[in-house]
Image (cartoon, rainbow, N blue to C red; front, side, top):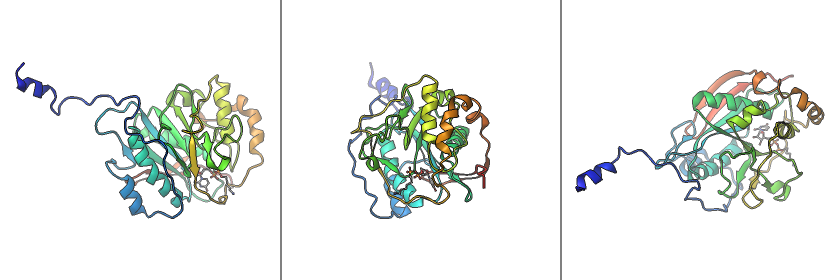
Length: 288
Ligand code: UDH
């Protein structure tokens, strides 16, 4: 075969190959430091390379098999968000994810509602791109090992299986807090998350209950790969422990088909595109 035709087969017009199942550039255990407040310019320097704006990225040399929206419930945690962005963008790039970062800001001073904000993130991210997987992550949790892959699995996945604040163990058997990953199908099967857990507590247990009630199991990374470091903080105002919340768990089986993504009501205030993230400012109609 003449040389020219071989060259033409491999020139720039050929499509990219799919990314391999296991990303080749992972490094394993990571050193994570929260000792000082980061400047936004340092965060941009460390993590801004090759981003497409709004915190979007896809691998340059292969087609990612994982379209992942990262959804972060948020209000008034800028220092935590900077740590998160500083560490997570480089990790997600090494993991060869086709991803977008969505920070869902609860507008106003009303009682916080983590699960409802996560539902808003699901809806709003899908308006931008055909994501097939959703990682729901607290803003103060950074993985200590990049083999903990931000992608979806055959079962809903609890990714934060070994948090430092719980001595790198599960605090109780069915714990489903911190960072979880659900495919679009898994999320729709449980009608999303509950909208009526105001204040702190039990919404993560409700999420777990929905999964088992629909006959699914939860998968987790082992306790080495599942290690997370949490930014230490005081309890936020307007997110006090709500003693009513645990009682609601008795009703999950009865109410989950009518309370969730199919009953979600909110008012979008604005969408702001930073280089490193998309900020969705939303009024979720908090009770006074
Ligand atoms: N969140 C905010 N702003 C708030 C409240 C919550 O952004 O005002 C988000 C944030 O992503 C946070 C997540 O919701 O990581 C979960 O809320 P949380 O951090 O209050 O829950 P956690 O269980 O902490 O991590 C409980 C209170 C800690 C008190 C510690 C006292 N030693």
